[in-house]
Length: 273
Image (tube, rainbow, N blue to C red; front, side, top):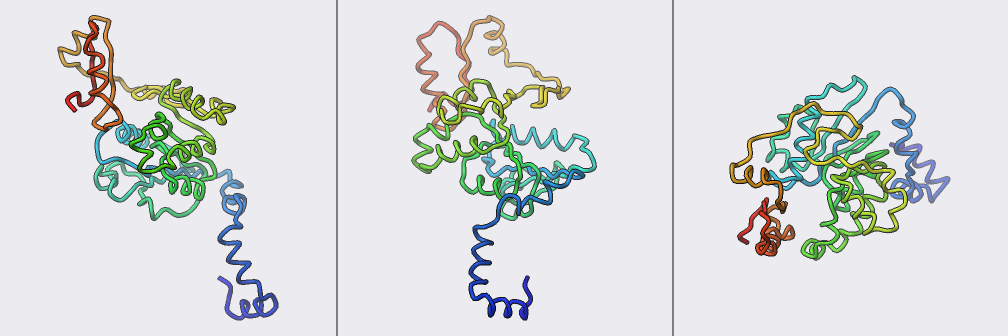
């Protein structure tokens, strides 16, 4: 803060000083101004885990984020790496996030700058883009699918969603997708991003024991299937419909469309609505 005598002298000598200073603070900071200290440092790495949105339900998206936090809490990190998890206050309470023993910050109280930010849930809000851009020198986004950009039920509520998804993919330093198909779909939907998108992306399937760096997590997957499902899977010829209770998943519509087939159908999600 400029001291009062010095400020008075500056304003007297340069009447435009106050306006120029306010303009610089509001609009003039460059990335070098904000991130110079952490970019120049090679002794410490700060990581932000960005969880702006967690629906209050144990669905695929929330379980993906919680699995990441669980794995992170069990990992042994180098002494020069610090991790901060930013999440909404309600989600912190609903999922009891303090149980993971990580440094937690309510999302709206986030401050400081980080070497890298990791968005565990797909970027679907302008404020999340601004947070990543303001606080992280580099950032990684998670990309599941293009429902946010395609589903009219969602875009009616926020017509900017297709643009937000596009900007998240365009400006991310790295992208984690849940399948090669989701990456191919993004390239087709946003042709302007097609060039170079795959070079920044890595596909890691949900439930995979392989991490994005190519290593293995060393965990065993598997639990007993219900007998009826096990018999269908054992038969070797069946269809799977994956979804949840959100209307745009259209599980019931898909199940009804497949009723006339002789092939058994396994549906994940409500089929009576």
